[in-house]
Image (cartoon, rainbow, N blue to C red; front, side, top):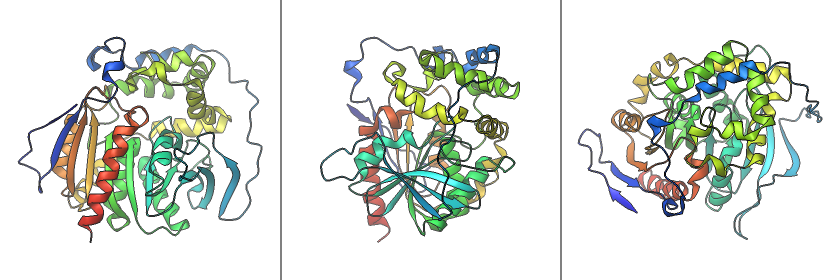
Length: 372
């Protein structure tokens, strides 16, 4: 069920607003606690108590060729949804920021999906499968995440990641994209769009880094744990016992239904981060570089962004309050629509992908008409 939210007079152009209750509310067998009642990520500090270094023997076995783009010649486990849709393929491309790993599916105008901290392009698997009939969907692995390969001393900040996106598009000879960001990826998307507005056909922002709202209070204990040297133990604790990842003291609050997240998904997200000691150190550097001066620095340019913009926010997010969706709508002139998913949390693109994909389809169609 959807109910309209009263329009906001402050928007530069009329912004349509909606609240969505979610298609699976009735299927929930119990009431979930309110966001404010969920224990934050502080309990992840127990990771610092995990003794010993990771003893796993998994290492990267393939040596990349020197060609600028290399296809790994394997289909992902995600199967295409629908007989007329292509299958996802994993690739990598060399840039000045490293060899960037990405997954793509479909043909047509390019839609670029940007994930956040601790995850990788796998977050967007449902979007790639479902939207590949209308877009060449590309989900990139950020610096210090997934299968992207970087130097041990390079900048991995959100600004560096925004710069990487430009290099990435240049390497693939892609002029414009429909840009979609979540969590840290939302902040990176804002920085990229502000610095390179000519590359953005449309923009979609979901719960994530905005203005001076990050790092969020609920995530600061995790940052402190990582700074104290507890990251390897914490990551391996979550991999050894997947229920730790889903717990209220770890990443559970990021999901509306953490119990439905599969062990395989957790493996896909976290295993690359512990594949080598250097990869874990790269993530430590990514976390240490969290500083909202990065988004504050581009605020002036963000306020001139004319790209058609969709803002979709979960109302039960313990990290980024829904008020930040209003802030974005106020400050991005191109905002056409702001939507609230009632009860949703930060990783709703994974959990409520059908609702979200409908919004993306409609947004892209409107953006196409607006740019004619």
